[in-house]
Length: 196
Image (cartoon, rainbow, N blue to C red; front, top):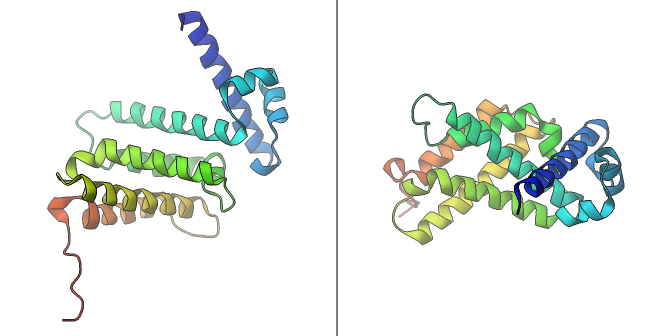
């Protein structure tokens, strides 16, 4: 792709993302249509569908890009090597600061494809930053990442739920406990026991 075409694509995607976020500040996500988004972004319908399948795809892709960009920028600002769970702590803070943006990704009636995709994004994030600490067994490492990614998903949902009183800091500490118990082999607790 030529540089000017690449810039045009980035401008279009940014405009669509910004339009969706602005609309979500005005009304519930379920009441936003693709027509609302393209009207706000001032792009054509065919342009929208050249980039995204539907509004769920726009929400998912743009939020994932935003999350990854924020995490990369904040990690780069660390004066020393950031701790292993720094990306997770950043994610909790992002969600706490912008619950209306991220809530549609984990709402109870969210599209199954969106739910699986966002959980997969958490799994990739954890694998990237914690994977080397999971030991040599790929099956055990994969199971641990699955467990931790669903735990992360659930805790993030709780932080965004106004009916619960779980803060981002509390949720992060809970996740760190899960990691210490299930993820970091140096801190792993014995499994099993029970009555013998």
